[in-house]
Amino acid sequence: MDNNLLFQQIVTFTTAVHQVTSDLTKDVKSGALTPVQYKILEYIAVSQPVTLSEISDCMHMSMPNTSRELKKLTEKQLCSRVTDPSDRRRQGITLSPAGEVMMGEAFQTIGRRFEERIAHLSEEERREIGQALGLLQQKVFY
Amino acid sequence: MDNNLLFQQIVTFTTAVHQVTSDLTKDVKSGALTPVQYKILEYIAVSQPVTLSEISDCMHMSMPNTSRELKKLTEKQLCSRVTDPSDRRRQGITLSPAGEVMMGEAFQTIGRRFEERIAHLSEEERREIGQALGLLQQKVFY
DNA sequence: CCCTTTACTTATCATTTGATAACAAAATCC
DNA sequence: GGATTTTGTTATCAAATGATAAGTAAAGGG
Image (cartoon, rainbow over all chains, first blue to last red):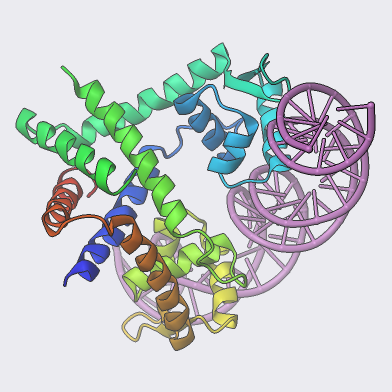
């Protein structure tokens, strides 16, 4: 069969997705952040509240390094930590108000660029895209 | 309108794509390679022959750094360079036989993992996925 | 209540990556 | 044919990231 062909298509596709997201997010991060720190904030923004272990797992970085970077982000006042009362070893990490503002601006820029990219598409095409996204997310990228 | 909703969906989707590709490619690279070096090899594999400038552009890295990493890859016998006869400043860079073998194995591992991921899907579903990929690639991730 | 496990921290060091200046050789432009 | 641009190189330095050892404090298990 042509499973191999499907795989080829996936490789091309994911490469394109990486390329486009890299373009969309180019230079959106404040100069005060390192790339890893921005990635962490992005993750917190989408999944808050999260624990250190979750960040560590999801971003494939060791706990000591995660702890270090999170300490820096906390010092920069971009995220807050609340000890979980039901297990005082764990901390619920969220964006601080300043962090929300920063990430809000970043996402807005990305959103604007995305708008440009799809500006020429009809309502019908957008509907199709939404469907395609849903399908792929459900069956392949879950 | 719900363009904002579409954007939300894109964010979720691209996050998922990054997550899944990160899982699929976890530990496929030889320990002798740094992450950046592996990324470069991946790019060469898909786009060969390429020039240094192209790598530099596509991977958003400076020429000096690109040159350095490529030198290391050449020393490791993983890629070959051929000076372009029509412009002797440029070099056509390709994978060496050893590089082809290494990347071939990597892609095979990734392919195997991908197979597992879609093992439960019917022929019909795979057809739909192929279509969805094509649509998105054409209209959004070009 | 002790022992083990889990969640996180601190400190330290090696490696990787990024940035910049200064250079060389080939191509192109006038 | 001399100035300029393009393509790549070498060297060097600073910063970011990764890896490891050793520690604390809370939770859980017998």
